[in-house]
Image 1 (cartoon, helix red, strand yellow):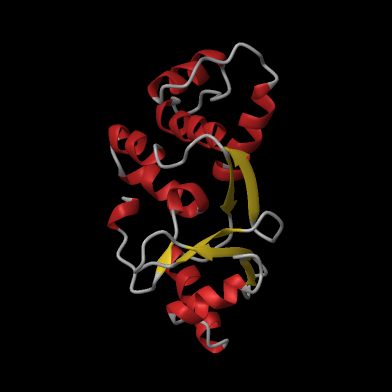
Image 2 (cartoon, rainbow, N blue to C red; image 1 turned 180 degrees about the vertical axis):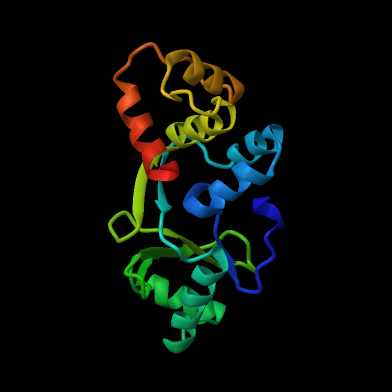
Length: 182
C-alpha cells in the first residue's frame, strides 16, 4: 500500500512507519499477509510516528506549500537550502507538528520527510515494537487482553521476530498499543 500512494508532490514519505492514522487504516483494510508485507518497510530502528489529524496528503501539501513560499521547492534550490544546514531542515506545520526534511533517494521525490524527534503529535518507538503491536491488533481476539505473552509471541513469530521472555518489554508494548489504538 505504501508504494501505491501516488502523490503529486516531490515528496518521499513512508506512512507505514510514520503516520498513526494510515497505520490504523491498513490494519483495517488489508488482509493479514499484506499487513505483514507492509510492515517489512518499518525495519528495527527507532522510528517517529505522527499522531495528529493531518492526512498524508495534507502533510505533503502543507510542507510543499511552505517550501514554495520560501522559494526552495525546486530541486536545486531545495538541495542548496539543505546543504546550507548540514543537509537537513525542520519545518513546523500549523498543528505545531515538527517535520525533518532531508534529500530523498528518488530523483523525482527529492524531498524526504518524517516527523521530528521533538514536536507535537509525536510518538517514538522501536520498529520491532510497532510491528509487534500492529500484528497484535490483527490477531488478538476482541475483548481479550492483547498483552498476554502467548499472543505477543504469536504475533512476533508471524513477523519473524524472536519471542519475548522478559516481561520488562510489556511496558513499552502496552504504551505503543495505548498510543496507537486506545
